[in-house]
Image 1 (cartoon, helix red, strand yellow):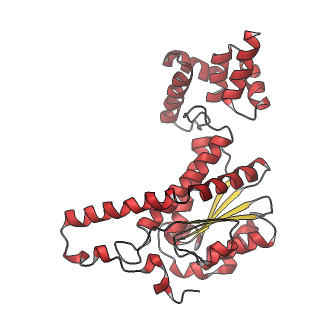
Image 2: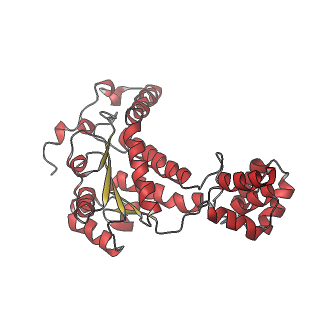
Image 3: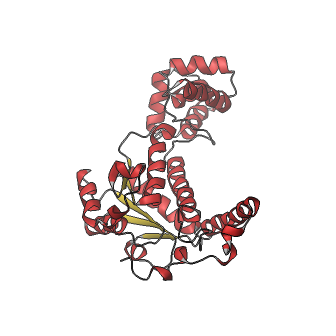
Amino acid sequence: MNDNLEFLSTEAQNPKSKGLDCMSTVEILKLMNEEDKRVIEAIREKIDNIAEAVELVVDALKNGGRVFYAGAGTSGRMAISDAAEIPPTFGVQEGVFIAIIAGGDRALKKPVEAAEDDKEAAIEELKKYNFSNKDIVIGVSASGRTPFALSAMEYAKSIGAKTICIVNNQNTPMAEVADVKIELNTGPEVLTGSTRLKAGTSQKMVLNMISTTAMVKLGKVYDNLMVDVMLLNSKLVERAVRIISKATNVSKEVAREYLEKSDMKPKVAIVMIECGNDKVSAQKLLEKHDGFVRKAIEECKSKKVK
């Protein structure tokens, strides 16, 4: 699987960074900054594919499925970072977005390079979570051929689950398995083969785009506000107060009062303020509209007009 690496664009030598060790600090930084522009361009070229991935994720979540990220090394760490941030940001329960990384938790802090070749480990991890055909696997790999990520996708495919790949090379084994392929042409790295640079950055950006957009489409956002944020500390409570205040144009004092009345649920507080109803009525409206704040408010206001 790892032969002929020289044919991968991410392993090629970047002509612009030839003589990197002779450059000044400012020259190196300017070069890296210039090369990072390619990340934005590569992602822009694949917006339609990313949109397809979002739709698959939304469908899976609507049908009670879960989203599994699979990767090794930098790619695995990018996946874990995104998955870990979703519950507190969007109020999603633990175990809906799950990242599996070659080498397990030990690989978060230390390199466990040989683990990426363990195809059976990926399958065992998925089985541990009772992976089913309602779930979805997003394989993340710069090379597009990492055995751990590829194996997770192949297993998912074998039981009828949907698969997505985020890779940084063209025509890879992972792309062949994927229902949706996101091939990001970020090109050769400034430091040859160091895919923790442009490739890793592009992967994290696309994961951000997929998960955030999916959450918007599932009613976890009102306007551009995080109305399902989990209030896990005092900072987040203050953020919720600001969110309610901005969403309803009330003072922070009033926002705080309604946050407390809503049992610390920003969505409920917003609907209570906008509709002039109590907590139970606001909750029922939100449930009726699958958690979409805008739809709940539109219904209550339309009834008042009549």
